[in-house]
Image 1: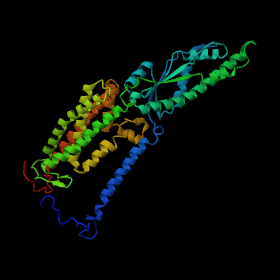
Image 2: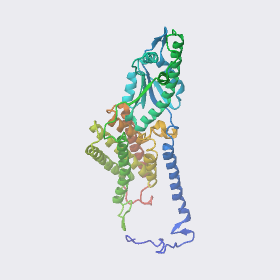
Image 3: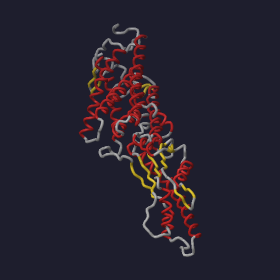
Length: 451
């Protein structure tokens, strides 16, 4: 058939079909699959993305926050008092364990976990907390300048800006209740002391003193290692992850289509021009090897390009070489796996790749909303979804000094696993197809040429 000629089965210019039961040249049963697939994809998109953003605090689970009690206590009326321990016990009892993973650790361990991004925040009670609280009670009836005892809430913006906001809101609610409880206890203690004091002492507290004792604790919120300028308030790691994944995902589609076009297994259409060449006698396995080779050559070029653009835009990058190497690995892993899926499933592989790498990947990446603030069915995906693994590695390299414990170790291992899976899956499937004589020419029993 000449190029650009219309087969006789195509409807005429008026759009009339040649047979009954057709609409615009397509049988009625041909309408059902695309409508069904699009509807199913839309349902999946709605479930993932609307569920992901609907109510992060309602979906909160296993949200890691450290609690550090350094309070040495004090002696009041001959009795040992440790208000820091009372606050610690109250927080452990009242903070919902199914929502917040409150970790009682020392200050050194809390700082290590903050530096590695393993916790989103820390509540720190200082060593002189009880003593300062006692002094505050005394100052309510004795003139003089005094400072309220301080509890510090450290947020971890490098682990996620939205996560830092959640830490602040959770701690605000918890510490407001603690402040009122401690204030009521301190007020009762001071009133009891006044009642037992000699007649020369004031009979009751002044209004200013009562106000001071009602909320005796100063809650100080401060970021642990604030993010430098040029990080987009902590979003640079997410978007760097996004371009790495999209480069691999879209690269697989482009390489697959362009190579198949050159080999004659897929026609190309450029506007009104239609190009269809004679198929080359090549096995599925060798075709996939060719596509993999192109992907492996392209991956470091793309990674270097991204790194260069980020540098030109003054994005702070302290570990350029590791970021370049990991970026090349990530692009190669996604592209190789995507090509294997296309080799196995053909056109359906486009949809599978989009679901695996994009539809399921974005909500479970933790790049914007932490996985601990998403529905559990999304959080489960983070255990194996490629985008989450890439994000952990990129975040560790950009914000956490390239610490393996900050997610880089897990990310590298999972990316290598994904690359290995893609190679193994593609090799097994294409070899199986070739051995069974399932050639790509539409007539399995009559291949163009034997290899």
